[in-house]
Image 1 (cartoon, helix red, strand yellow):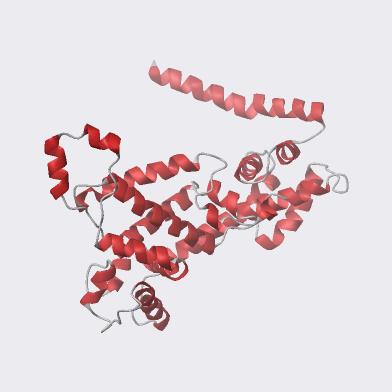
Image 2 (cartoon, rainbow, N blue to C red):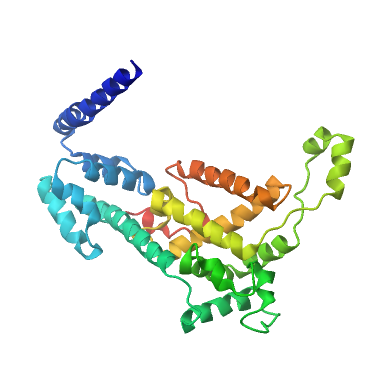
Amino acid sequence: MKHFLRMFVQVCLYFYCKCLWRCLKFVVRKLTGQCELQRICYNTKPGAARTMKIEASLKGSKSKRLQTSVNVHPDAIEKTIDDIMELKRINPDRNPQLGVSLQACLLQIVGYRNLIAEVEKLRREPYDSENPQHEEMLLKLWKCLKPNSPLKARISKQWCEIGFQGDDPKTDFRGMGLLGLYNLVYFAEWDTEIAQQVLTDSLHPKYREVTKKELSQLSKAEWEKKKFDKAIGYSFAIVGINITDLAYNLLVSGALKTHFYNVAPEAPTLTHFQQTFCYLMHEFHKFWIDEDPLDIMEFNRVREKFYKRILRQLQNPEMALCPHFAATESLINM
């Protein structure tokens, strides 16, 4: 019976999507004199809300030309816009702003797809200690994080001071390839003060401040125990690689569309992704302190809880994870 009901619901949904919804769109177009793309661009403010609706409309179109428009090369976007206007019988002279708005949306949609490809390429490229560029980046990471402590040797226990597991960091990049190194170097180089502070706190962890309300809820025994407990730190570099994996999953799943479509006026780039990583590293650090885990074995639990919190935030179409990295007002003028 349950199987039959499930099948019935699926048939109804299919019938609605394929027939009723298209009939409804046809009626609305006749009443308003505007196609769905026009209605979205004219009635939805620029950013993730508009771009995601345009993307869904193009992908769900019965026209193959419209479906494939989200997969064109960036250089072909202008020609694609002309094709869309012609197919929808829209006069570009009477609707000049429509072409501009559609172009902005397509740049973001196509750019997001290309960003996934670029990030995936870096993730698949292994760290090579025989490659001078790879070695130079690794040494730059040390210099940015520990400017007053010269590295005595390339193979050294000193690497543990910035959170690597052994005396040669190359083995720690296996999971995320060069992407992990790229993100760590970007964080250390462009957000140096915060990166150094996070590193220091990870080595010398501090408890978060206990509020008066929380204090009143602790028993005398719990308070005595808490006074002698040690705050738990973590390995900075290893966590950075782990947060790289988290950011990668958010990107590939499409969850970061909300953020990138709100902060990138055109195509999101690798820099946008690295800036997002910086934000996630800083936020995870604060989240770790607030969670006050009993030991490092709780890392996966804390990470999963943090991941779910970020996912919930990204469900808001107006969400921008790191507003201090947001693009200029050009987004508003599209």
